[in-house]
Length: 468
Image (cartoon, rainbow, N blue to C red; front, side, top):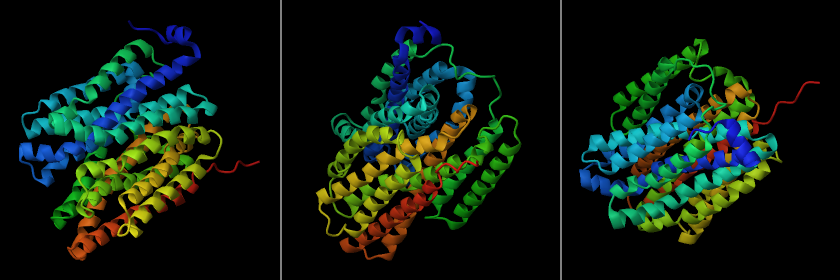
């Protein structure tokens, strides 16, 4: 069955766009779950394949690299193949990566399937915001983003707890199979709810392979440079220089390309350029803290892995409840105010973790995590709306992909930066319990400072006053 857009709108009426949103939301939940849930299985994977930490971290970073790079191809795929075929192809790729990854017999097979899953996730993640910005009017966009955000943040909130249970009961392979039921449901919904004649299709054009290659070289080089800062300064310097030169070459090429991978005129819109800066900085803080907190709980405070995973569960549930409310508020209040306020709460939670850690109880740390997730709930819907509302319709798809790209790139850099600073501070402080706590406190203050810095950019997201 291949229904047309006209048939589906006649059949479902005003409800149709909500069915489309549900379809793309479930697929994005699956991609986010595949990104986060595997972290709890890394100790088992390391033992099974006899991996050191340096190689084991590529199970996560390989996924993140692939996802970061493939995000920029989403607008081209939508133009060339439409929503139905693009989404179906990405879900099938995610399904293949999960199933074959679960049957991996060696490390190259495992890592290659993580890269396949990452490529699929990168294509999937910008699509819901594109759908919302094109299918919903200004008064409905905040509510739609809130409902979408509820499902998306619930998946990683429950992921560590569910993942820990699966690993203990069925082993690390079960983690990869978690995406299977999600993918099957989405494939059924896609066949029934997405039109064969997608309104997102446009004139077929060639993919900007040169731009994609340059941004891939830049991203991979920058991340490898940060990783090697800990062990080999000269090699790190070489990677960082190559990454920066590739980035400069990418920007220069995009300015003159006929069909660029990323339209540089996006950055002519002040709301978008400031939103991209916010996304990059807060991505560094958010992803860096997501890596830091479980390590802190186990290494400095000596909690068990299950206790460390459980501390974020109430915060994740609160976030899932807050996001629909914040989405509705984004329809009524200027986005830059909500983003700035949310970043303030996020910075406050990390600062409290640093300043109160030595005297903080388990439940007090849980409370600080909840404060941070409330702040995050205000940031997520408002940042998307504030960044994209000023764009012309033909730039919305590229804008959504670009915002996701810079946030993910910031996150990847943030994880490496947090690891470097933590290692430096651990070496600077004494090796006893108090010294380790002090090292983590310093690193939490770095994350708080990043979130506070993003507030300055968030305030610049406000609409420029119109000339009379």
